[in-house]
Image 1 (cartoon, rainbow, N blue to C red):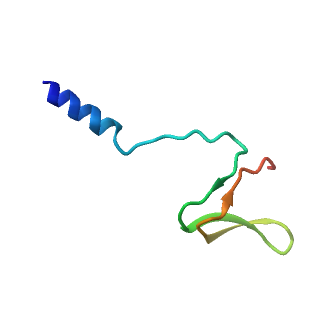
Image 2: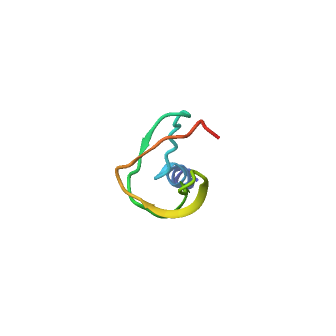
Length: 66
């Protein structure tokens, strides 16, 4: 019985970690994100849907603008 509880505990806690990142805090991309859906501005400054690779090492920050 103790072995079953120990295995359940180890499987439940192994490999998963949650980190809280407060709003407005920049994070650095750890590995390239391929084909990420993004908004880009066209020649008139109008947001247009697009797709791009976001390279490893870039920083990501939330935008407070709408």
